[in-house]
Length: 205
Image 1 (cartoon, helix red, strand yellow):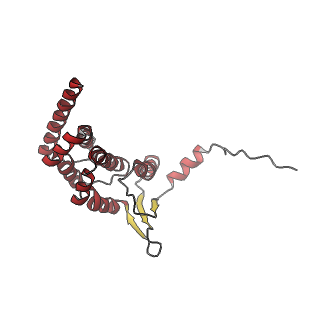
Image 2 (tube, one colour):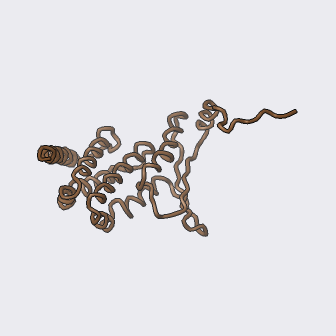
Image 3 (cartoon, one colour):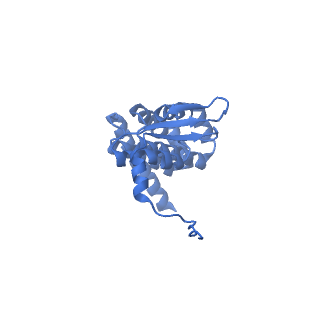
């Protein structure tokens, strides 16, 4: 007898998938190149961080998160996701050479800096990977440094506004657990200055 033709769309199996996720103990993402890192795109925190957050929400337990680095097939490495976070933070996010080079790209460079903060925030919101000292240093280098503020003013003040808002949100949500009160106040003042600057520009346009 002929068998029933299977639908290419498959069938919904939400309950089965949900059950499977409650049994997952390890969430790993493998990457075979070094052209990108976990704070280089929102994709990483959406699918890897999102998976970690989903497993925790469904099971009530924190799964172990790992990053598989197979850029060199002959010597693959596997790092804890917090270890990978620290590696990217040190080698790119607060690396003075990267910061100076990205500023050479003007408006686009400032946008990339703002995006880096967004992605760092997103990964922390989903996988709890960012320590307080990281937020503090990002605040100092990305939002409060005078030379960097001048760069934003001349190139992209919207980026500075977005960075300041995101860092303050991290503190408000408890992700930045114990921020320095002086740093928070400096961020608030920076945000107020950004708003005044952008309002002045809109009035002139």
